[in-house]
Image 1: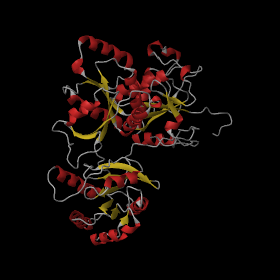
Image 2 (image 1 turned 120 degrees about the vertical axis):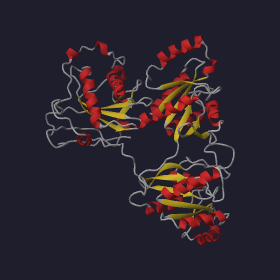
Image 3 (image 1 turned 60 degrees about the horizontal axis):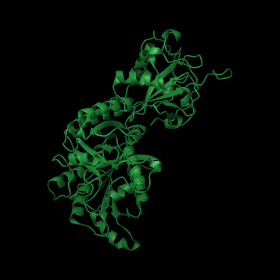
Image 4 (image 1 turned 60 degrees about the vertical axis):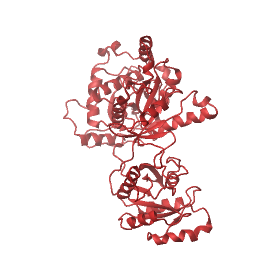
Length: 541
């Protein structure tokens, strides 16, 4: 997300570059709104004022003269270095949002069924980690971003640790040990009601040798009468136990304060593994989402079974495909618009929206044997509005005949023509047809979603695109594009600083040229326009 654009009223960079800006302070999303065709515009922009069907073939370039970046840019000058481009980007009030956050990490560890995931949810302030009333619900170590008293950090939820296990449970224990080895603070959770177990004692001896600070949390402390029970944990040799009831919210804030106090100034590790990338299976009811998930998880590759230490959510599945581990989320289908839905449909709609927001890449399932419907378009628009990487899967391909294929091609041309950048895969969840093509499409979409173009490359491309086709005139004036920078990824967002507004048709032209040069297949690309205020007679120089 782009940071606030600050007022710029000074000589932005050394040399001849001098300009004056008056930008409203506020986040990018607050300053721009999306038009129905995927472009971006100021809040006061009237979409009806422009012709969205921009046809570049009708433009007479002689009417506009030579493309112009403005007097601030001279095509005969020596090209700028990448450092100079980034300095110029900062002068325009755009901070580089692509540096990975270097956050500290707290690992929450303990034997199975002591309430680790419940405590993680208290730290997050939301239900993210899945909680079940039986041991071993959390299987892999999964990281979440939390914030407390203005400080952001990673929280790693781990599977139950047990030294005397084999097979899949041993792998879970190794994941917990890896989390302990890479964390900046360790929260060791024990059960006040059960007391010290042999596993607790073994784990405590390991933690005594750790160079990482350890906070001993006595969870399930549900009554003031339990202090005597909690006193037993002093024998673990890890200092004072902290009384906590994750279920009722007691003591969590005190533990968070202690975590922040123990965090080092810089994390021990520059980056961490944040767990499998999240895939949302979305689509209208009965389109085959659950069938697809079942097909993927029914094979030997699946890491989900009915034994302890497996599930992530009743409808979530960790699935090992050919190249990597994924977290698949099966959502309830949408039958009505969210605002018109009632009862369980309303909550299903909210969950679908929430899952899309939480996902990184969405597989949009469409029933190929039926006409592409308004419901399909509605779910698709939810994904686009959320800015997620996208793959479209036409399911039930085993039911297709030649006539239906003909009409489907026409429907794609008419209803999905605005999405030429999305990979389409024809699959059958019933027979397993072409399911192996989904993973490469997801990987490509996520790579595009994460991709960044340097400021120098971006402005060199922009010069060429504008020289080939200048923007249409507005109020007898030719808008000039002064500068461009990529303000964020996930989704990629390009900010153009101009002397006048660029209509949606021209922004679509720029997006098409941008994709021709840099790819970004499978990811939406947002283009925001920042119009420089016209300098008045009494403006400061």
